[in-house]
Image (tube, rainbow, N blue to C red; front, side):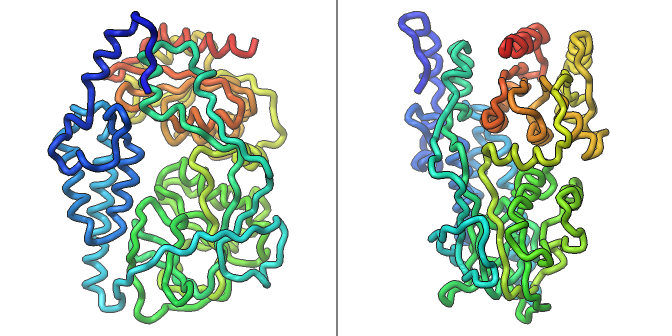
Length: 465
């Protein structure tokens, strides 16, 4: 649906009707696929789902190659950003093909196909007897009413038609849940597969068939893997934290793997805790220690390649757009909770994503009493303190915005986007913390209009008056 008004937006609607991805891609492999909305606009979310499905099976590698080739040929002509999709899936495809070749050449391994495990859910209370817990998928649901909502109309009621159209195309109106049930799977005789970082997972027997849990994986989901011909060792029990979708991404490490620690108290206090280490953000030990967890329990999943675990617990990732539970959990690390008072600008001056007029933006914000912060220079402890004290945050879109998890309810966020890269992720996440939200968009050169930025900041400051 595109926003229209009587008479005065006819030219805009005419312009939009001429921008149709489906027409551009007519005659290609993409034309017949269910990746377009009713207006013929390519939806990147649907495209990602499609490519994920194709990557599961070796037989579909050629289709994936063909789709990526078409996207690359038409990139720049489409009305949505496809650069990131092309880059991500080219890399995934190349890595998985390399992995298959490595298995075929290694005499200690064989290729094995998996089925996806049953999604039948067993309800459980927060406290239960793990010793008597049988294999299966469990759900801890702490609420009876779980409404679905969207704040889009209210939050962007004053936006002009062009901006609303852009936000709709980028998914800003998506529906969210107030709460998300916590899930984990208990399995027996599990095998750890870390032969390749891109297809790290755990397999297990279910009704005589070797299966994998669709939720317990990195970003690449495949239905095949390398199986050691002879298991390397056996351990009795292990608890596996969620596998982050991107191993060296700060957001995924914090929001997925660290957040998994919230369920630890449900299980034996001496059981090993298995997690996938990040080469860039080794943050699990930091947060585990703050929760009083013995660091001797932490084991890297890479150390267990080919290991059989007699009884294992696989924690599921929680919702991509978070819930209030995320803020409640990370709020435990802010003690004591301060009264937010700081105005903070996270500068990208020293990164590839810097604004073309970064110096100008810094100067104007500094004149408005903003602290200019280079987050890469802060320790984890300093990041928690900074964001917990921040009343209004101005920052470019990126993984570092995961630190809004430490901000107080009712604080303010202004997110900066490049014109060709608009994503709803942190807007929707901020809603669960009752944060006031604004966004500013650069031009194609990465230049940000400072006057527009200051006007948006004033709107935020006025919101709570």
